[in-house]
Length: 277
Ligand code: ADP
Image (cartoon, rainbow, N blue to C red; front, side, top):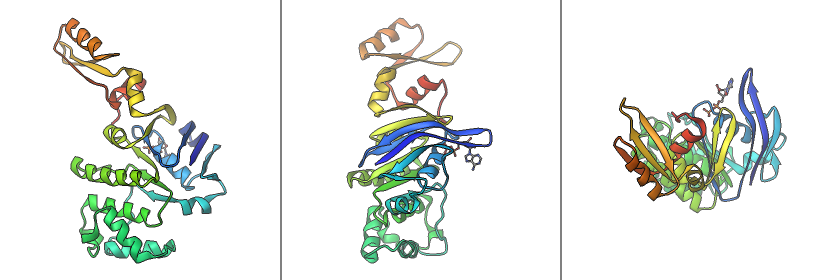
């Protein structure tokens, strides 16, 4: 459904994307995980035809991002990071205006449907200004779903949300996933990528440094981690190929150790020597 082939993009001296290639299947939820400045938003802007690659190519359902903007715009829904809702208008009015602009057929029924999907039916008459941050985010998702897009782009969908509200949002993404939509989401929340995505691409400084299922990425670095607190208070981490190996290692180390399963943060640290902030 989405093909990205050796894309490069620089802003002055900053190489925002440095030869990125991957494909996303129809119905797949694909996560781009990386710290701030990794190039995630640039990639979304490129796939939604807002900026052109300097080199390489990308296409959605066979339409090239350069030259195929009209076709691509009719196929995709975009949930941007910034809140670009009309704050003076109600939930329903925001959806009506967007629907009119995008010539949504059978609009009243579609509006009911998307409001139900994001659990905002009861707030349809509320003015946007009075909504919580989480509700606004849900409304932006509802708006993107109004055109029934084959592909949904979510740029850092839960940034700035409380953990509990974040989980509500995950439910919405899970429903979208069940509905068979192709989703590309960017995130710097490790658990978000782990919880929602079929496959995860790890982006760092404009380069894709790993791409696989969460399980395969964890298996790659070793499925178990031994956390060891050193005498000077530093946290040392050792990976192990099995639970037995991890426990044997924990016993052999002098300081207090705990054994746990590997998470995606460990994968990132192992690959880059850094943490995702
Ligand atoms: P992310 O979404 O992963 O945080 P971005 O794609 O926003 O990363 O940014 C990647 C790099 O490109 C960063 O170093 C950022 O400062 C730079 N960048 C992005 N957009 C622009 C722009 N319009 N002008 C100049 N530099 C930019």
